[in-house]
Image (cartoon, rainbow, N blue to C red):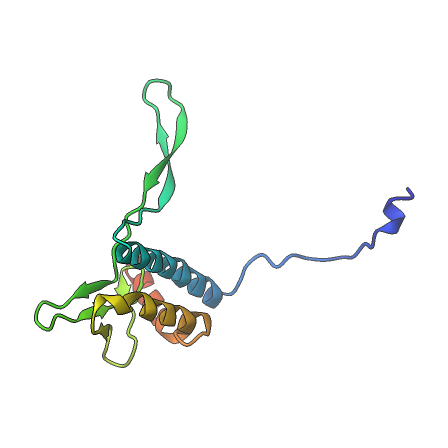
Length: 146
């Protein structure tokens, strides 16, 4: 019993869940990370293909196996055919976030500014500047499930 007497015992409870606002912000940051990595890969002339684990059933043995599968990441940006400028949207689920009243995209002069702009958006999300826009987009996504 000499070892246990040297320890400090307390009564503590773990908080199991974060607020929905923090969860949505984290979800946005995860998706934004994929976009930043995609932009870095395209700037370097490569590809970005993250993997996820998919559980499949082997028809011969009847066992379930986990196999790594490439996850498709669609870019949030495209080049406007008429002006030649790059438009960048920020998405939550399948919805574009309204960044400013009546606008849903950021116009960039060329593709070299994509990474820089994504980093600025990341800082804005981390700082909580886009919480109301994320909340609005979240409600729109949830409305599709009802």
